Image (cartoon, rainbow, N blue to C red):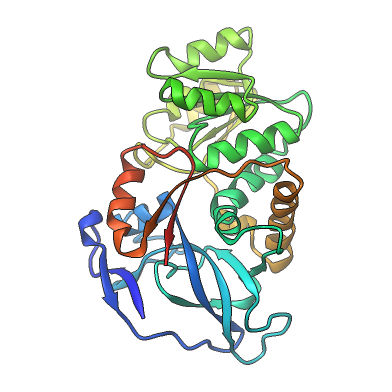
Length: 328
């Protein structure tokens, strides 16, 4: 089969289209013929060696890249029930999706309803499940809460704005330009801050009357984290779930006290989809909202599998206006 793999950590130039053996599903696994693979920042972190010491997201070399895909079940390993060849399925947080086939633990697969196109289902896996756990679990938003969503026109940002509004929260968001501001406004953001034109913390404090917000969802990381912490209400929560500008290496504990006895967390999606029931509940919410017209899912661009390196460069350049996919 064809697959995109790396032999060593580094830049996008290390991504190579290779011929590899088609996997054979082991006990409890399903072989999936992949139609679409999702492109995410976690792929870039893995490619660059940022997770080389991670126990949650292991990165042994050589390594087939990709943590999210959608396709059809081609074969079943022993001990698998509830699935059949031909079923449309999607998944995330199993490495090896930039390929024609993948052997996936069956408990991680979700069946895709007929009313949900497979590209949409794929787009709702890693980024959709992330937006769901951020808004429903890491900080369970409710009416009366306010939140700051960084990068509101990005893949997670667009979904997170909408889920926060479904929860009844007031949403502030940062964007890089006027085009992205229009996207965020269309999706329901109450206040849009163009961070290249103003200091986002100063603008947020004006909007909130100096109080700050209950929670900041920060996937930008290095360039924003200090001001994100200082944008919180007393005893608020800063959720750092990515590092588009660079991973956050350290936080001074005293700074959390000085900012108002605030809290800081750096979660992994894997810990919020730890069981089949949890994955299914979150995915089914997302599928139902999409089918009911309550959730807008934007696919920015779809690249051929062979152009994975170009897709990574596009994501790293901050050009995205939604989800990026590979068509396998």
